[in-house]
Length: 420
Ligand SMILES: [Zn+2]
Image 1: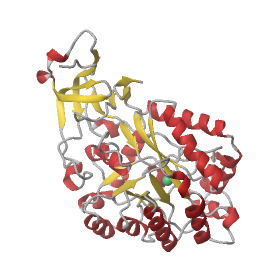
Image 2: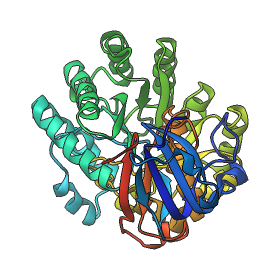
Image 3: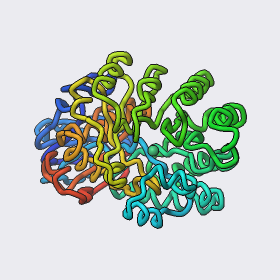
Image 4: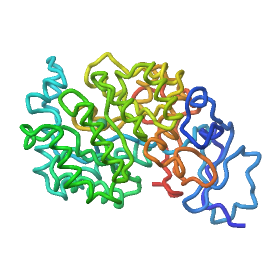
């Protein structure tokens, strides 16, 4: 029998995330009812988890002088965080607009005046590929320190063919150059670029479908669109996602962030893997989506965004959960509406403002986040066969995780069986 290469032992709690259904994301009471092992261990061989259990059941026959032992006495051990919605690659920052927001201007006012996303587009187009890569690597290093082991990265600050392709290329290169796994998504339909202001949203998505998507096969699994006033109307978003789906892409949408336009239900009906933001999604629509998709479409909730935009409207997650809609949590890291990589803070705000319990918040940022980017088969829980992506936290129980508001509880990060 093969020896264990790494054993994390004596954990006060092992948050396995195991014990629920395996064919779909956790929903309803399953979001809370997964297994915690007190006084537990996790054993790895190479890059895979091979055993998880109580210390009393640890099989010493697998432990050799070569086995690395990591003592987690008094600590929580849990899966690496899965960050399922970021805008990782961009040029510049928008600190100047932060001051405008503090003086009372709204997100859509700033966008309409040529700021917002468009100001990052100008900075991103002006940056070299090397500058963008260095920025992305800098941010990934920050995410890794917060215990993120897999991260989705959207394009969307190029809005022309060459820059959008460059952003996807940079995300993939950044994934290869450091340990955090990067999953690229194409968000060329973020807003309508100035070049298409006259021609309009439909002409712009036709351009993307014709000139860009064919070059992205195998480079990005997901195609995303921002359905919102000032971005893309519902019917254009539907047309775009239908066409992208026909080309073989999996679907995501930014919808119901600032208004209820029906984007979430539309995308879910097309089989979207995730519907993101959902602050204005109603509990009744959430129940319909849960039923129509048989619990396969994940609502990705982004609690730091309303916080940072000074909006009091947060997604009614408690009702979503009660109505059976699977939910995930993410930062939405981006230079405009959430310049934070602190996913732990997002978990705390989700508990405080959206009605999550600590266990639900942890599930939403691990296993359900993995579902939201099509990676539930290999990460998001501590189960034999999954990638050995896990964290040792400087807290003794799951309830402490969202309790220490704004802190980073991470003591050790293990990615693919290696401490990083
Ligand atoms: Zn976003």
